[in-house]
Image (cartoon, rainbow, N blue to C red; front, side, top):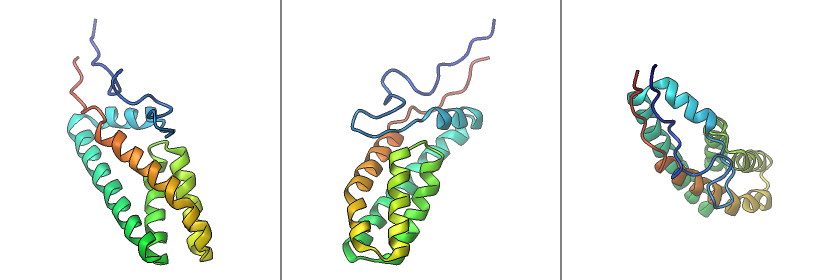
Length: 139
């Protein structure tokens, strides 16, 4: 009888539905994508995702500090795409709200998203950085 390797999420992984810090990440679909990709590709995807999320976080910090509408709009747009594949519902909502505020040039609206968005983003970066490294399936 064929043996299956354990799933990427383990008991030590953040639970699906949250990371224990108020973040609502549903990583089941992302886990499935990584399993389909295979260990080498999945490892590369995780590294790129962590790099991209970190770059967005840094760019958002700078854009909020300087009230740079163009950068806030670009970074929120990038974040919308990244969070969509990760099932990060609250972060997706924050990014969409920020994006709408940037289009409307609504600084109070954009400012109101900063704290929850950055907290959710930090939580997602933490989850991705601690996501179990994929291993080859045993036949």
